[in-house]
Image (cartoon, rainbow, N blue to C red; front, side):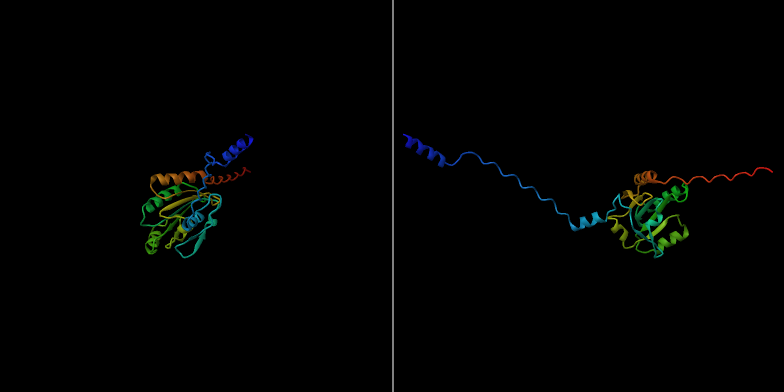
Length: 200
């Protein structure tokens, strides 16, 4: 009897198990690859915690480093005279500069026009108080990761980008003005009045 029980037990142990095996853990999906173009654009885009270090190519052929306008708020337009918003931006910021003390706001316009003659004629006839850049190859736009013009940036007095827009309609100009108001340096102190000499 013991032999029979042992045989039956052995036979039961040899039978395949009917228990369902645990499913294998899913393999985590691979992270999407970053394309070279996207990586280049991300590396070119300005970072808020790093002052913008660029030279503005001037129509004269020289270049003006942005570091030279540190201490002022900066609004910088990358555009072209034949693109929407160029004239509106110019009129808006000419009026804005009229109401501000000198040295608080710097306005930079960088034209992407292929031919500088019309631009030079316009500036010679009616020069606004702007820093005029000319960048026919779009090198500045490329450095800033700008895919389409126009684009405008606001920088604080230390050169950090605080905001940017990709249009120049009324809403975009209002947004630029809001950022400018946030970072505009205080007006210089009023000069001390000269003492009045006492009568002798």
